[in-house]
Length: 46
Picture 1 (spheres, one colour):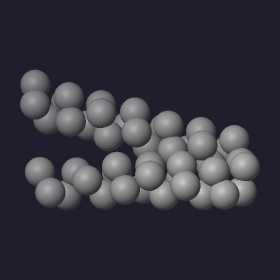
Picture 2 (cartoon, one colour):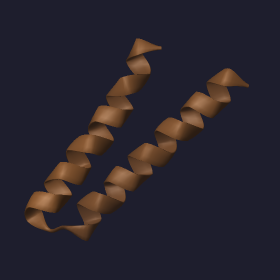
Picture 3 (cartoon, helix red, strand yellow):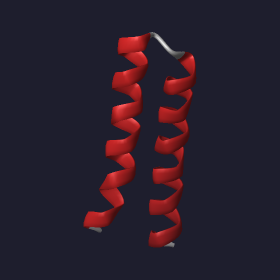
């Protein structure tokens, strides 16, 4: 389960960079990473 968290950390980095640079593209990447993480967890638990 520990490996799964790197996606969450990646999303967090995108959100922080998006806030610093005021970039909607970086925020979008953050959301994509977040959705990918949730989907990955759901697929693994099913």
